Image (cartoon, rainbow, N blue to C red; front, side, top):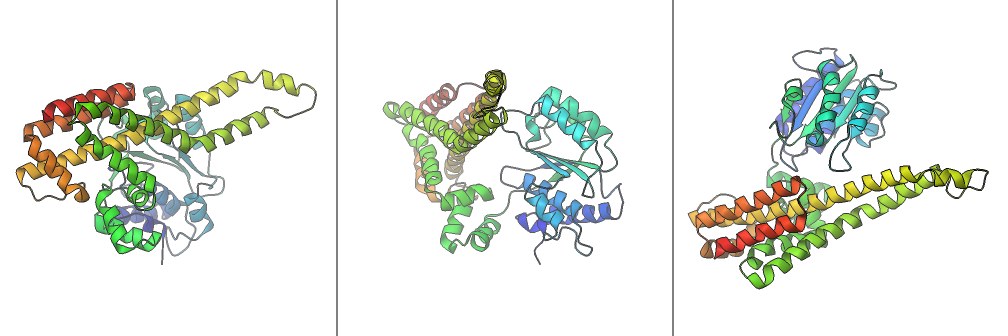
Length: 395
């Protein structure tokens, strides 16, 4: 019988821990087994936000026999994001604003209206700014009796989550799913044939969603090939910067395409709410006076596009770093699992023209590029500098 935790891939220990905690919550045992504040960490694709939402559903579940049944109204509405007492905070821009966090804290102080708990799920809690952290801290320190905070972050490193908040949360560490587990999900849930599922699982980097996109989206496969092609292009000064420009532009276009429909809908809904198209007295004046509100929406949409583009570029850099990692493993004759098992020949080619020291220099250059993007360096400049280092290391 399927339950909410069936959505987690390869996280058996985590499922057992969360199921036990949900049972404790139902019994009113708030203490060693259950607490008000949780921190879910794990590498990209491990499913930390999915784990948090599934846990929220299990806490709200009304089935008398199965905690987290996945069938009751509370479970289904939580999983679909429509439960009245479960609030999901998903950053749309580069950070979570202090205003948004203050609104969340104020909402969290209310008693549940229809559910058993008032639950706040904060995805990408590493995007909280200092003021937003401070707004959240007191609520996490002294949560209302029926309120639970579920935070998600890549790790417990102070750069990802403040120590003051980390120390007040129970930590749940998710692991990277095995390729076999991912392939099984792709076969059973997505109906993919065994060969395609196995390939996608092997090159998805332990990320279920990424493996699914690579298996089903030709554009995603093309972007991966374009990113991996930088390693070869960097060996030829005549082509290296042209490839960079193509990669950066592709990331920007992807961001526009992914967000255009949503941007148009948001703008149209706001204009309608402000009186656009109205014929009554004062309708035109009301719309003229709303320029500031529309400008604020445009700023949020621009921030969201920027984040989407940089996330796409970051995925490409992770793929590229994996290729150099495979080349380094080849140079040492290591038999470790390859990041890109379908690119063995290209990894061997890199290992034949670059020393182990040069390959390490290349990996460090890619990591520095990722850090530069996090610090809002213009993508073209950051990637140009990286490619210059890659080319120099090969020569």
